[in-house]
Image (cartoon, rainbow, N blue to C red; front, side, top):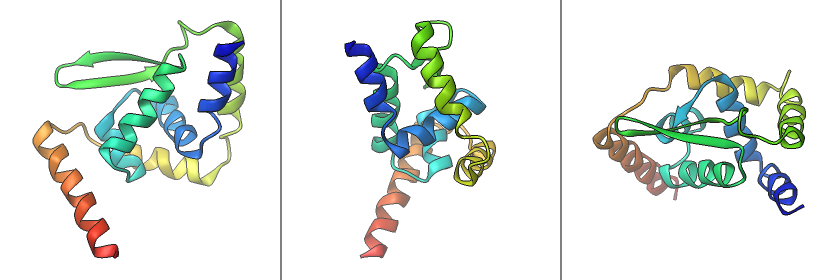
Length: 129
C-alpha cells in the first residue's frame, strides 16, 4: 500500500507530470530537463529524484551524465497501469506537446555549460525583481 501512495503523491504535481511527459519522448539527463522546461538544475534534480524514488524511473550513467528513463521493465503491473493511464491523459495537451518540442532542441551539456545555464537562471531572477 505504501508504494501505491508514493506513486499517487509523486504524480500529484504538475512539474513532475511534465518531466514524466518528457521521458516518454526519450531518456534525459538533468540538463535536458532544465532546458526543455526552463527550470533550475536543483528543481530538475529534485523532480527526477522524486520520480526515481517512487520507482517510476531508472538511472544509468553515460560518461558525465546521469540519464533517467521510465523503468517499464522494473515496474509492478499495477504501477505500470497507473503510469500508462496517466500518460494517456497527456494526449492532446498543448503544454505537454510544447514541452516535447523544446526537448527536441535540448542538448546534453558538460558541467561548465551547466554552470553557465544556472548563472543565466540567477541573472534572470535578479532582473525579474
